[in-house]
Image 1: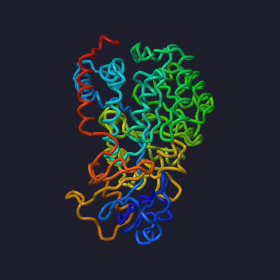
Image 2: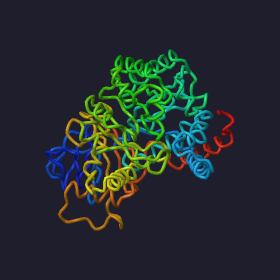
Image 3: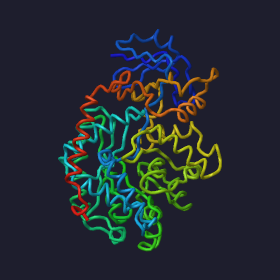
Image 4: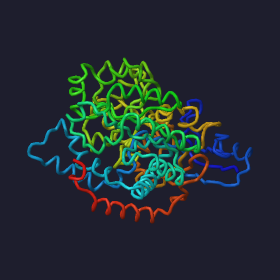
Length: 477
């Protein structure tokens, strides 16, 4: 079947043809077969299904390269935990991240059921696709047994969301650093051997059966995973040609504590162990040193920037994005859990770099959009399949309705970069009208197709209420 998205202004992310003012995209099966002027594409392809994009923007789908989908169920708990930590008379600013996690997300993960997980996953998918996200890396650290991971994969498959499930790993053989930041004991459920075995079993079951979903190993953080275990996960990743996902130098206290324990900084040590490679993803990277930035560039590893989370969420700080790009590192964008709106992440990324560097061009709109598309694709090793609208690539794309009061008027002399500035600075994410993932329409003229959105919201509220009844810090601390 041929799907034709016609008549819109098409931002391709292809330098050879960055903008088509009256363009069209033809899709057959799961692939793009033509991108060009609307009249030419319509002449060459007979469409069984048409999306009328006149007066709208057509853009590549964005990649949310770091989040925790179930955490949408704990938004209220997160807000209360933030208020409690902020108002504590002896608040330790360097331990802000860990204190909030201990009062919100860690207890939530301890009492999460499969039913809760499915409800939260579908709610997060609805929010993501409504803000232009068509691919996600879900760093899942709730129940991580094989049966739960498979159910998570089924929930993502049902929605049609292209996904990597980065299965959270935290072996019982924890390093002393874990006690220094007081990670609750329930996080360390399995032995090292069990963690590797379960992850391998998940890879074998999910990756071979789905064209949309992959499982990757995800040692949770350098603060509670030993360097030697990172090396073991690297062996597993290489065996199955997948990547590694982890948190890295997120908290303000983390680098200092790490150096005290190991004598050098985490990226330096992982480089010495030969663990860094192009599909090694580091979420946050907020407090990287210049030496670490050089090593990331040298190995082609990825830093996933989570600007909204770092500005308003778990741990304050600004990742050194311009320097990472200058040194050849790959950068992707993420939302990090309780926030799932990529438009907010785009906006915040530009703003943080401007005020940090006192430079209005520190991170231009076209560059930050590249991070959210091609940067995310490169992080997954899928740059030949995702991130731009070109023949032969997967049909992951989004149609944005710019006929809104706050997006009016558009310039009569439009450019791709100008339109992206317009969309990011003035848009909210609610303008996404239609979304296509793997050639299938999952959002059509504002209506979610794979699931009943009203029912999803009801089930998520029910799950959150049930979690609140089961949730006590005493359960896990």
